[in-house]
Length: 166
Ligand SMILES: [Zn+2]
Ligand SMILES: [Zn+2]
Ligand SMILES: [Zn+2]
Image (cartoon, rainbow, N blue to C red; front, top):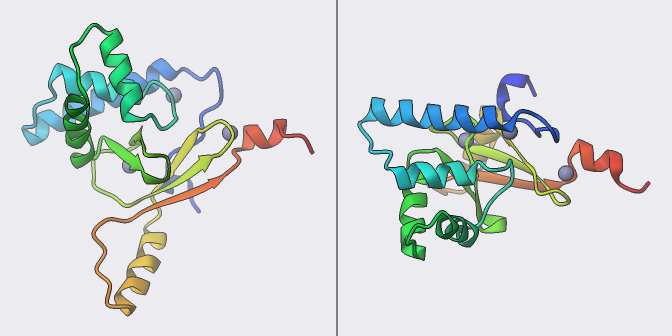
């Protein structure tokens, strides 16, 4: 698989994560401006919270974080913001964890493949058209129409493998 299919690699501890957050927020603001979408302060804050780490975050953790901001937020507030972010490709939903993760490349719609570390919960995002293509062909062969295609693969990331007992 070539590098260009990796939208978001496993990030090492101590990388400049502020830069990741800044890039994600700047990209979202550009995309919203181009498409005439409204990135309200709440939507932007939820996106920032999803990006706090390269790990999926649950809706209730987002809710807690919003409340500790001093916002009066309830679950529908969070779900509406997440729906906006999902619809516009700024975040992806990791079904197996019932959680959300920031998208590494929200400028164009794509089918994503996720590698999820079962130890540290870090996630890498791939977008390999060859993988989506094979699945589409198999689905076609069965007369199946795909509405959404996300692949979630669990395992151990390189860093966790290094520190895992042999
Ligand atoms: Zn980062
Ligand atoms: Zn993505
Ligand atoms: Zn790991």
